[in-house]
Each structure stands twice: as structure tokens, then as C-alpha cells.
Image (cartoon, rainbow, N blue to C red):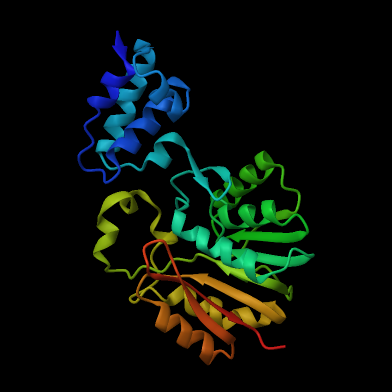
Length: 276
């Protein structure tokens, strides 16, 4: 018989930058309890079946597999999302995109588009906070769109529509008050692609050409045809790409172009407004 405190003490995840947190999340899932339970009852005995499950989780994490993929879920904004290896794992930095969208667009009725939705994280976070908005979430990967739809149904958000589309390709002449996107923005030869959790995430959701700007260029070039006058375009990008994205938006005729800083003090999102 093994107690909770002993299992956590012997987790041994030295390669993880969040070793203790990972161990707690995996053990809590294995025994079907919350992390607070682990702290409240550290001397509780864990069944052999749960201990074996936890050991399996640890082995997968030691191989580098992200905790979110092991558990099949990830928290984002105010919601919990199902995740899978064919989608990017939602990250805290992307919450800046949600926060900025909510700040810029009033809570009155509006049409909003989330390009490359993946798990549906951005679209569902916005829809949950703004019931008056009609949000469309698109992804070119059918499995990703199906996953976003499952998350939508589980959260009971009737003001979201999920559709398969490669950026704007299947949207015809539809126009929106606000377009948001966290597209691929990593350069194809970036060494970060071979390190950490990113190794397990789909390259199609990460890589965008030699300089990482290929998809951002497409979105910025095509967005004016899908924005209403005065509409906003909000884009997440790499930590060192803000100046390039600002230049692209300005060249395309966007006004009020600006960048916002993330939790790590990097310019993480850039926005522009279509002139009225």
C-alpha cells in the first residue's frame, strides 16, 4: 500500500520545468480527485490500480508527452477543454487574445470569427463571456473541427458555429465585426520544434514557412474582404514577430495598429482596425 505523499515525493520528472505540478495533476487524475485533495489528505492510501495508472502516466510524461495529451484535457480562460494530439494545446499566453477581444468589442450583438480554432478555445471562451455574440469557429483539419464541436456541445454554447475551412476559403462573402486567430507562426527551422511539449504537437498547427509568417500574411491580406467597416483583426504571433506583423497590417491599410504584451513581457498579439 502506498500513500499520496510518498507517490508525489518519488515522482521523478527532472526534465519537466513544472515537475511538482505535473506530478500532482497526474496523480489527481489517477485517483479521481482534485489537487486540493492531495494537499488535504497526503496520508491517504492509494489503491494498487490507481497507483499503476499513475505510474503509467509518469512514464509517458518522462518520454516528453504533454500532460494535457496524457489526461485529454486542458484548462483555458474559464473553461475546461478536451484536447487531442491533432490540435495545439491551449496556452495561458493566448488568453491575452481573449482578454483584448472582450475589451475592444462591446457586449452587444456582434459577429465574430475564430480562424484555426483547434480545440475551440478562443471561440468558446469568447462565446461564454459574450452570449450576445454569434461566433464562428473554423479549422481546416476535420478532426480538429469535430473536437471543437464536442467542446461546444459539452459547454452548451448555442452561440457558436463550427465549420471546416482553410482560413477564409469556405466563408464566401461573409463579414464580421471581429476576427481573431492564433495561427501557425514558427519558422520551419526553429530549434524549439525539437524541444519540450512542442515535439508532440501537430506541425501543421505550428510551422508557417521559412520565417514563420506565411499564414499571418495570408490572413492579413484576406481579412479586409471579411471584416465590416470598423472591424478589428487580432492576431497572436511569435515573441519576435510583432514589428513584422505591424508592418503587414499597416501595408494592408489597417488603422490603430498596436501590439500587446503577454505574461512573459513579450509582444504576443498585434491588432488593427479596418477603416470605416
